[in-house]
Length: 573
Image (tube, rainbow, N blue to C red):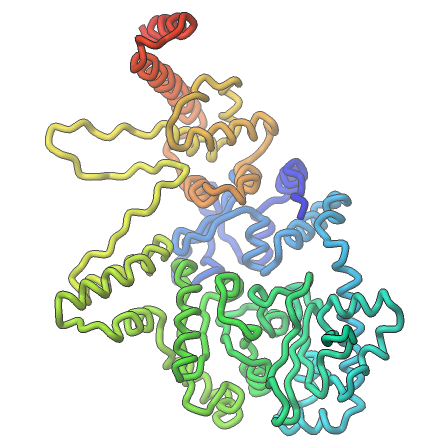
C-alpha cells in the first residue's frame, strides 16, 4: 500500500482546524489558550480532554488519548486512515492524490467486491423464493426488519445454483472461485461451496460484503457453520461479524458483546440487544481486540462454561491485556450448559440477558482466578509460582492506573512486588531515582529537552543549521532528533500536529505524543534561549565524546586523527 505523501498530509492539516473538527462532535469550552471538554473516549466527571489550536493536537490527561485531526476522526468516527484523510480533504477542498488512491487499492479488489455484491443479491433473491428458508428464519424468531438489516440470504440445494446464475464465463468463474464461493474436487471440477444454508454476509468497515458465513438448515448436515476461506478481501482474524450493523444502529457505542455465532448476533439484535458481534470461526486475535476497543470502551466476551470455552476466554484475555489502557474494561460471561446467547435472549429477553452481563466476571478477577487455579496461595512456593507466572503478562499492560492496580493486587496475593521497569524508549525520559550518598546527580537529558521544545514550536529547529554539529553523538534519542530536524528543514512551516502525523508509524510515536501533550513553562522567547543553550550543550557533549574515543586508542591514531584530536582539544579550551 502506497503512503500518502507527507507534503499532502502537511497541507491537509494546515488547512484543517482541529478545534472545528472536534467541536463539531464534542462541544468545547475555551480555557486559556486551549479548549477543554469531557473526554469522548472514556467516562469522566470533570473535563481532562484538551485541544490546542496552536499545536493542532488533542490530549486527554485521564485516559491518555491524543493525536491530530486525522487520528481524532479515526477514533471518534471509527474511520480507517484513508477514510479519515478523505473526510478532511473533502471539507478542505483538497483532492487526495489520484496516484495514491490507485496504488492504495489492490487491482483485484474492485472486481472481487462486485462479484461478492452480485452473490449477495443472488442469495437474497433465493431467500425470497424459498419457503423452507423463510420458515426456518421465522421459526428462529427473526422478523423481516432484522433479516433486511443483516442482509440474510439463502444458498439453495444443488451444486451449481450460484455458478449457473453468475459464472457465465471463464473470467467470472475465476473471480467467484478467488472470492471463496466455489470449491474444487480432486478431479478439478468446480461446484458451489455453500448449499442449503442460510447465508450471513460479512461486511468490512465500509459496509461492503467481503465474505459469507453459512448455517445449516438441516441439523443432520455438517459442519453447522461454514465460513468463507481467506481471500484477498477477507482475513478472518481481522474482521468481526455484525460490527458494521452495530455502527449503523448506534451513534455512540458504549459496549460490544462478543459471541461465537452469527445467529447469536442476529438474535440479540432481534430482542433489543443491538451491540453484539461475533468472531469468525477463530479465537480472539490481537487485531480483534484492537478493533473492539477502537469502537467501544467496554467489551464483554461470551463463552461456553465448559473447558473449551474457558480456553477460548484465556486466549481472549491474552489478546486484550496489552490493550488495556485506562478507561477500557473487559468482562467475561460464561454461559450455562447447553445455552448460547441466542437461546438465552429468547428465553429471558433483553432484560434477563443484560442482567447476566452485569454479573460478568471482570478481567482482573478472571486473570488472577485463572492463573491461581492450580496454585496453593497458603504456601510460599505457591505465591512465588503465581508471581513468576503472571509477571510477564502484567508487564504487557500499558502504563496507567489499571496496570498499577493489577500489580498491587499481585502484591496483595503474594507479598511479592511486581513492578517492572519499562523498556527504554527512543526518547530518553528523566526519572527520579535514589542515589548513593556522595554520588553525582544524574545528568539532565539534553536530547529530550530539545525534542520537547521542538514539539512545542517546530520552527525552533530552523535555528540548527545542517550539517548538525552533534550528529555523531552516540546517545539515545539522537537519531530521532536528527530525523525531526530533517523533517522541519524540509517543511519549514510544519506545525506540531503535522510533525506528529509524519512520525505516526515511528517506534517512538507514543513517546513523541506524550512529550507533545506537555505544557512547558515560559514563552517563545524563553524557549528560544533554552533551545540555543541545549544545542550548544549537545555540541559540547559530541566533542567530548569524540575526544574520549580518540584518547582511548591514542597510540594507534594516524596523522589525520591526531590532527583532529588537537583541533577538538583546542575547541574545548
